[in-house]
Structure formats: structure tokens, C-alpha cells
Length: 293
Length: 233
Image (cartoon, rainbow over all chains, first blue to last red; front, side, top):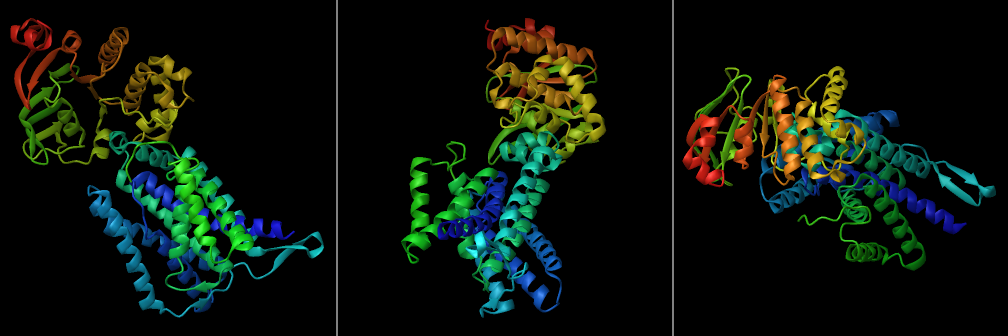
């Protein structure tokens, strides 16, 4: 039964990675850039939700929606101010800018909210559901996290395959020039992508802090790196890849933690990534191309 | 309909188009011929708004379009079938066509799809297929169908014959003639000068970013210099 408990815990953590990884993978697919500030948008989302509930006493649902709105605006503003002027610049310049934005967000958070950890109150309460006469207990947070991940995934697949904007996003990710010849506004499409990624980051931040309640300005950075790893693991640019990569990474991390070593769990996670990339350089579900990152 | 007046286009410090002027009138087929690197595609991309001319003017129906963003130009009735087709390889045939109608109202898309399928029955057969699985000729038809989805008054085609078997080239040129007969004005860029001049009304000969000859297509076909340089003697 402990195995099952760990498995479910792994899927739940993996679901959070998957939701974050979606932001990396969608932005990469369209803007061909690695937005390393994405992890810190998670932290901002969690803080907004925290203060909305604690200082303003808003109900959790309203707080989450508020966090999503703030992060969406933040994501679009970051893209407009920091990345858009570099559209024609070498990818290295964009990468360094993204790292700069990441530090900017962390330091701004320190200034605004100090480095003292906040204890985040779960948005879904602390209860759990018991199975097998109490032998297996699954917390509400775990259930909500996994459900949220599945709903988001289905919604995104629907969005990119059925809606005009979603199809335009796929067209832009393949060939921006040809997309413009169709009348698609590439800048708008990139903005929408950043907006979706940032809104998902807010959800991930809230779910992450509901499960692991310590909130600090650096809270987003490690999950951000892990989710980036998950995106690469699954095949960057691929939406199902983000799901598969995220869930697998979560399971590996929790199992390594439980059965091998707490200290080594991160090392094991990254070792698995290295092995996967040696065997399949484009990731599990990625397409083999010769593109340089 | 389309008037291009004294445009100069640069790639960084490279002066690719050097003071070119030409005109396309309603109902015509006009061709730009010239060797690789003469600047033919650059001209189309400038008209389409992907590139901007530093000088001069481009007007479509007397409305200036130089400097207008590429995605706003399509809605004016000006579509391009780009060199190398550039269909969206990971999207289905029908999705590619829908993208072509991006600027049109949703209510008009079904009718536009029907028109394209009527002209290209092969595309209808393969509508659910991923474009990357189509043959070169089918991809060219898809690229043309996609451009037609925006219901252009002026259709610009960049090297539609490239990489196609002779039989397919003839088929593509027949379609170009049919489209023109149905009222679409055509601006055709080709390396296959023989084919291009045989369907065109007028032609311009380009050499390293300049127009060196402009004449009726039939005169160009009989012009000794043109014959020597572009028609194999």
C-alpha cells in the first residue's frame, strides 16, 4: 500500500510539473525560446493567491482567479518588454535576458514580500479521502491537482486542434513567414501563448504551495527547472510530451526519494534525464530535428 | 492594380533590389523572370509586406501598402504562394486551407473550401491527411488552394514549377490560366522562363536586382538576348 501511496504522490507532483512544463513547451514551440522566468511566475501566482486569501479574505476560488489574471498580465508584459525587442536577436541573447527576468522577479518578490517564508494555506482544505479501510489515504490537494492537470491537458489539446487561434499558434510554430502570409498576426499569437503559459503557471503555483506550503521568493525556481527538465524529457514543443515528461519526472522523484535516498533524489532525476537524452535526443515524444537551441 | 515604383530593398548591407518599378493591371498575367538570386522572391516578399522597401512606393488599387504589416496585406485581396510551397507540414490539408482563410468571416469559409476542392479534387480526397505526407505536386496544389482561400484579386506565385515533374508543371500552369480566366490577376515569378512566358501577357526580365527588359511575353519569347540567357538558345 505504501507503493501505491508513493505512486499517487508522484503522479500528483508530476501533474504540477506537467502544468508548468506546458508553459515552457508552448512558448518554445512558438517563440523558439526558453523562458527561464517561467518558474518565477509560479511564485508570483502563489503570492498573489496567498495575499488575496490572507489579507483580503477572498474565497480560494476568487483568489486563484485573481492570481491567474495577474500572472497573465505579467506574462504578456514580460514578453512585450523583455523578449519582443529581441525577436531578431541571437537566441543566446534571449536566453540570457530570460535568466535576467527570472532574477528580476525573485528580487522584486524579496523587496515586496521579504525573504521570510510564508505558510501557504491549501486552497482545497486539508482533508483526505480514505480507501481500503483507511490504509490508503489521498488528500484533497492530490485529487484536485491530478484532476486540474487532466482538465488543462484536454482543454489545451482541444484549443490547439479546434479553435482558430489554436490552429494559428500551430501554424506560427511551424513557419512564421508563411503564417503572416495567411494574415495571422504573429505578435498577437506569441502574446496569447505567453498569456496561457502564465495563467497555467499561476494554477501550478497555487497547487504546488497547497501541497508543499512553504512560500518564498525562490519557491518557483527549483520546480521551474524540474518542469523545464520534464518538458525536455517529454520532447520540448510537444503538449502530450509535457504531460508524459512531467508525470514520469514526478514519479521518479518521489520513488527515488522514498526507496533510494532523499539526498540523491534530485541527482537521480537529472541522471535519468541525461540517459533519456543520450538515447532519444529529441525527448520521449519529440520530433527528431537538427535545430539548434 | 498593383504599382511598384522605384523600390530599394536591403538585406543588412546587401542591396538586393535596386530601384525597381513595374505594374500589374487588372486581369493580366505578368511574369518576372531571371536567374537565381536576381531578386524575384525579394520583390514578392516586399509586396507581401514580409520585407520593406526603403524608398519609393507600392500601391494596390491606388492604396499605399509599403510598410504595412504582412498580416494586414492579405485582407486587401493580395495573396502569395511562397517559394518552396511552405505549407504547414504538421497540419492537415483542411487545416492548411482554413489558415488561408484566416482573415475571412467564419461564415465564408465553407464556401471557399468548396471552391478550392472543386478546383483541386485531389485535395478533397486528402483533406484529413497531414500535409507532410503529400507529394510535391499535391503540396503545390495545397499551397495554391490555401492562397485562394483568402479570395485574392491578385495572386502572386513564387516558382510554382520548382522541383515538379514536367507533366505536373503543365498541370499547374493550366490551373494558373484557368484562375486568370476566372478573373484572378496573376503575378508569376519563375525560373522556367519558357513556361512562364507562354502563359503570361507581359514579362519583366531581372538581373541582379534590376529590370533589364520589359515587354509583351510573346516579344520576349522571340527576343534574342532573352532566348540566349533564359530559354536555352
